[in-house]
Image (cartoon, rainbow, N blue to C red; front, side, top):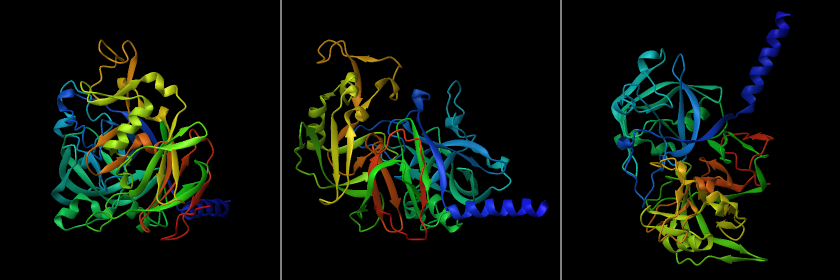
Length: 421
């Protein structure tokens, strides 16, 4: 009997190791906290952190015993960092700050200080975090990742941590001349996944992140691959891909939207709530959707009833054989009652408004006068994305919303390419 049990346990452990994938549930959250501590919102350039405190979060446990936190998932940065329990932003009287969890190194048996005072990170919207680099065990998706390098934010302007899963050479420590293995790389080195690649399915209110594999039941059609473009310094920094243009369906034909700068490097960034495109292209999309710029709200607005419309925008990538992702206008209409600093009451068009008496929502496409151009969650919800950080490629297909089945295919080896059929 004992031998039989041992054999069964060995088979289970071996099967888990052969799977070579780590699966995480993610959930869309709106984070509210004391207005006096909220970051200054820059309407011109959104950061890779939260872009309005609306984002996709995943639960992790850090330390021994595990301390549970929900971290904001960000493909646009590389560091995983957590708020320190005694950070000022977590101790504000009367505020519900850091309600998504904090980390106390004194309560972990496996904590190791790695680089004191070397963790310093700042984002485009002037938000920042600073403190120490440390190592500890992280349990993520039921899998334990030992000795993972992370940042401990003793000071922060945001009340929650962040799981950066972009290119590891972009970690904040590289400014000191050092690079460490971030989460995806560490998982591969430990043999938890075969190659440094992962798939992202945002869905609507919640989706999944799959390290080391692809879920073929979460998208429609076949994956098509586009190369990641280098930055102006000739380096891979973000998941920037060539966007060739946008068209809109008009009856039996598509109409390309006017654009003087259509072939652009668009950064795929799950840390951004909105999408930012060149001025002429954004304005053409506003006109097509019926959105107008509000100087008072500093945002493109439209009636919330437009969310029931069936219109779609088609985003074209790469060359003529590249992927096309259709995004329904309904995905671009954002409920303003869930936006930062919102009172919780609907916005109603007033006197002088073209929509007097109508409930108003924000449009999820903003105009940008210069790069970086960003495709954030307002676009990404409609796409299934496979990020290959070894071959510097992104696989894209239209998402299958609210899929209930799963068909996980692990990458078989290090450097294996994204399957396209």
